[in-house]
Length: 315
Image 1 (cartoon, rainbow, N blue to C red):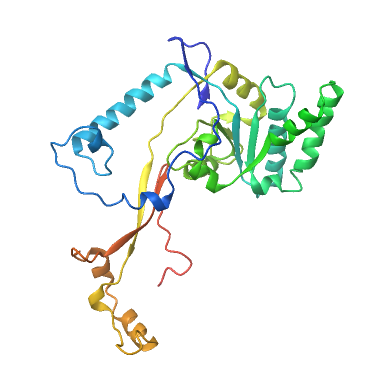
Image 2 (cartoon, helix red, strand yellow):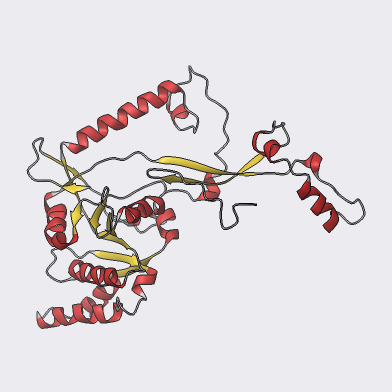
């Protein structure tokens, strides 16, 4: 996402108020059920077909064309959002980066801002001594007191506008966040894409890392950049994502070695492990009542899928 100057095609206003209700994408457990669906006949059309996970070549082509056309149109107009809830993401391992997150958070929560933003930071950052959330809130309250705007209600308001987020919130309540700000390199942007699986809020990324293909803005100009984004609007660059489903192989019932009296003992289990046929497990023929694999999580990711063999790749 990037701020833009005067729009040639006028304004397009999108109202997206924050919503803290338990809405948004379903979690992983629910969409495991829909992983395996009957294939679609080439002549199938309509809304039911488009909601299936298996689409025809023509449906995929039409969808890709529609996304490209939507991206082209969005790139030529300016969108204005009613930003209330701001999601801040950064690497917590970098102490210098924590200070920048604190600087950004204080600026967003300060009384000079026209809107009363609610800022969500990582739970680990909020509890970090270097970030010093308690000290940050006291500094903000002092500024309000010096301006003669401090009251018991204002004190509670300031405290409630700094909140923690965790991965569960990103997956179950993505509508809670109106805007995402990342501080770091391309890896931080990719992590933001992984956090929000089904619904991704607009992401504006500041470059503070070694790579910057996805981070377009310099953090030194964050005040100017964000003021322009919140008041003048932004242009949106859509990016396609991959959907990857992890499939775990299952032992076939016919290969199980059991003891009728005591069940599978340790010797039987060892024999079973020696008899494992990896080729059969990977490409074996499935029967109606027996599947060679089971789904173990579906993820939507940006750029690429990486298969890691773990700490013991020889096994």
